[in-house]
Structures are given as structure tokens and as C-alpha cells.
Image: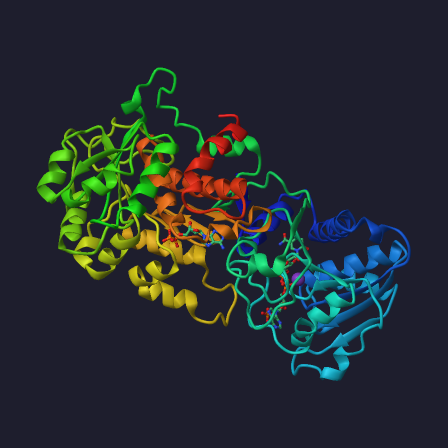
Length: 549
Ligand SMILES: NC(=O)C1=CN([C@@H]2O[C@H](COP(=O)(O)OP(=O)(O)OC[C@H]3O[C@@H](n4cnc5c(N)ncnc54)[C@H](OP(=O)(O)O)[C@@H]3O)[C@@H](O)[C@H]2O)[C@@H](O)CC1
Ligand SMILES: Nc1ncnc2c1ncn2[C@@H]1O[C@H](COP(=O)(O)OP(=O)(O)O)[C@@H](O)[C@H]1O
Ligand SMILES: [K+]
């Protein structure tokens, strides 16, 4: 799996590499500059031939230092180079200062004050024609809103695009918070963003993808740093092997000799007459993803409607809590899904309370080691449950229900549902960002998981998944994984079904949420535009075949 870093984690890794004595900070800056130039020429090979002109905008920190290295390397390669410094040369950090001086021995530097901001006219002294703009103003050290001179650059971005100027952000587009993907003040959107060692969390959240546009990761030779895995946020699988590891059946499940119930039995509770479509989508998702058996439990009046629509999926009447408890005596039912099309009446509230309180017979083996799964049916005690849609509204309205949540629950809110469940956390997340690093969707999801004691999957193109221990992962449907056509009615219901099916197969809640979200996006990408929710489960066999499963 890829790992995504915050600015502080990246600094700690860099520091550890320097303290190990293997590499100096100045050398890392040189490698960063070389990496950026290499990525630019790989992206636009035409810039490697003929005469070209670059404008390099350097800031007051080490991001600016990278800019001076890039200026020097391009000048040595025969480019015409214009360099500006936004800040005071006397206050540059040591490595940036060295590279400032190296550049100063080769070419001119136009300097602009940060405080008070320079005049608009100063900015307008750009060359008439240039091919490339290097944005090395602010990187991971952005602490406050970006204003002043470079607001004008941001506003003038369209003009640069029209003129055919390519804009490259060093590490992150200036103005973008590397931890949260939120814009502080204004931002310089890039055509290409070259980052170092690892992608940063902010590249994937919020506005990160929109303004970073395309990410290239330059290796600066600090692989294997001992701190490189501490607290990192998981990204999407980087290689086919990682993807297979994410979605394959947990080891405990005997996939060669099993019968249908050894692949788990999922129970999806549905709403009343005319409301069953959402639960049927979930059920189809659970069955296609490999649950051995799936049953829909609906009010008696909705039986005929459901029966007319279902074949492989079983059907049972769930009139009330008594009926439900009777069904749950069957210990093979090891995963439940409540919410899609469920309703918010008294019956539904009572069923939710019963499900959250239910203990299957036998001894609860207690907490399992992180990341380990038990085979389906082998874990008496709490039922694994996906809670979505209407049930999230019920939980938001009733504190006593919320208090019953436990570690085997997965909550799958979209933004609106999240705000109803965790209004204070959502308010903090939605406040304009005024200091960096800003509170992020990762922070918010971790806080929500801790408060509720269960796994939270906070939906969106930047779906964030966290558990109460702080483990966190982003399923980003952005950049080359973009699948905006997933925003279609019912696609969330299918996701809830995918996760339920994986729980039934024996995945632990965090693993099921991660794998379900990843497969959901893969199905959408595989199908392509025109997708409707019904297509998602039907695309799974193709996605599995592509993985060689
Ligand atoms: N870590 C690594 O491994 C490697 C890191 N490398 C590079 O270093 C970069 C990080 O460098 P960095 O920490 O010096 O931060 P950077 O973004 O240059 O700016 C800090 C300065 O900006 C100032 N400032 C902040 N916001 C402001 C605002 N709105 N308006 C005005 N001023 C503002 C801030 O001032 P302060 O808040 O301290 O008053 C401080 O002076 C990283 O992105 C990468 O490119 C590479 O060389 C390879 C190895
Ligand atoms: N622009 C987008 N790109 C990728 N995925 C998206 C986008 N918008 C929404 N999604 C995904 O689509 C699903 C929508 O779920 P939800 O909001 O519950 O819709 P519904 O209630 O209609 O099923 C979620 O998995 C979400 O992450
Ligand atoms: K930058």
C-alpha cells in the first residue's frame, strides 16, 4: 500500500535521514531540485530540446531553496532563467541560503517584500514570453493565508494557460495546505506537482487534487528511514500485489473446501412497501462481493414486492424486534446492514437498538490483534454491522442509540450525514482555514471514529476511513482513479452492501471498509461513464478477473 505523509511526518523522516549521517540537508535539496527537473522533462520531453525560458518564483523557506536549485540546473542546461524571491534573503534557512548564493553567482534575482505586500505593478514585470513557471514559493511550511503579490499570479493563471505556460508546483501548489488539501488564502494551481519521497495527505483531500492536477513523486534517496511508517495515512494500493492483498479472502477462510455458509451470511434489513430498492442494491453488492448467502429482512407487507425482484437473494419477514431476534438465533448470520431505504420510524429505531445490543450465543473471544480477521461464524459475540443512510439519522437524533455503537460497526456517512452525527467536528472542518496545518478530513474522521468507537467511512471523492485506534486510510477517486460518475443515486447503497459482504466473508471492519471502498471505485472505473448503481455489483466479476482472483 502507498503511504501518505503529513508535513510533520516528512520533516521527521528528513531529520532522521540527516541525523543518521548518511545524507546532508543540502544534498537532499539538491536531489529535490534534480528530481523536479527530471519530472518536468519526463512530462514535457519537448522542453528538453531547443531554447526555453523559465520564471522561477522562490519563497522564504526551503521550498524556495528547491527553486534556486531548479533555476541553477535549468540555466546549466541552457535555459533562459528569471528568478524572483518573495521574502528577505537575509532570513533564508541555511540550505536555501547556500542555493540562493549559488544562483546569485550565476544570475539576477528580483526581490519582493512579503510585508507589506509589493505593488501590483511589480508583479507585472514578467517576461513577455516564457514556457515554464516554477512555483517554489511555499511548500509544506505554509503557516498562514497566502496573500499579496502572488494573489495576482493566481488570478492571472488562466492568462498563463492561454499563453501556453506550464506551471509546476514544487512539493505542493503554494497556498495549498500539505496536510488538509485546503487552500489558505489563495493558491497557484499547477499543471504538474513534483513532490518528494512520498505523496502528502493534502494532495488527496479537499481541493488538493483539483489544484495539484498531476503528481510526480521524486525519489530523494531516504527510503528505509526508520520513521517512514509511523502514523502514516494509507493510500490506495500501489501495485497489483497490494490490491490482491487488500481484497483477497482472509487466510482463516477455507476458500477451497468451504460451503456457502463458510463464506458468511449477510442480513440486510429493508424498509416498507415501495422503499426496498436501496436494500436490494446493498444485497446484490453483498452477494456479488462473495458473501455465501444474503437475506433481505423486510416488513411483511413488502414481501411480495421484494419477492418479485429477487432470485438468489433470500427473503424473510421482519415485523418487529421479536421476529428479528428469532432470525438472529441463527449464528451463521454474521454481518448485518441497516440503513439503505430503511426508514426512521419507531419500528426501525427499535430494530436498530436490538441489532446494536444483540449478542450471539457463545463466548466473546475479546479484542483481536489489529488487522487480523476471524473466519465467518467463528466469532460469537457482537455482530458486525454496516450502518448507513436512514440509520445515521436515527443515531444523530438519539444519544442512547449512539452510545450503543461498538467496534464491530462501520458507519458510512456522506458529508451531510457526517455533519448531523458529529456537528462540532463538521463545524471545525468547515470553518475557513486560517492557520496551517489546517484541520483536515483525516483529522475529522479520526476524531469521529474515536468518539463513536467504531470504523467511520466518510464518503466523497476523497473517502477517508478511520478506526478508533487512529488507523486511517484514504480511498481517493481522483487523479488517474477519477470516477465522478459514481455520484449517482444508490451508489452509496451498493457500497454499504460491498462492505457488509466483506464482513460476512470474515474481513475485520477496517479492512472491509477499505477493500469495499477500493472495489467500489474500481467497479466505477471499469464500467465508465453512464454507470448507474445497478451496474456496480455486476462489474465486480470483471474487476476480480482483472486482479487474477
Ligand atoms: N522535508 C524534507 O525532507 C525536504 C524538504 N524540502 C523542501 O522544503 C520545503 C519545506 O520547507 P520549509 O519547512 O522551510 O517550509 P516552506 O514551505 O518553504 O515555507 C516556510 C517559510 O514560509 C513562511 N510562511 C509560511 N506561510 C506564509 C505565508 N502565508 N505568508 C508569508 N510567509 C509564510 C514561513 O514563515 P513563518 O511561518 O515561519 O513565520 C517560513 O519562513 C518542502 O516543501 C520541500 O519543498 C526539499 O528540499 C527536500 C527535502
Ligand atoms: N465525485 C465523486 N467521485 C468519486 N466518487 C464519488 C463522487 N461523489 C460521490 N462519490 C461516491 O459515491 C457514493 C455516493 O454515496 P451516497 O452519497 O450515500 O449516495 P446515495 O445515497 O445516492 O447512494 C459514495 O461512495 C461516494 O464516495
Ligand atoms: K510550492
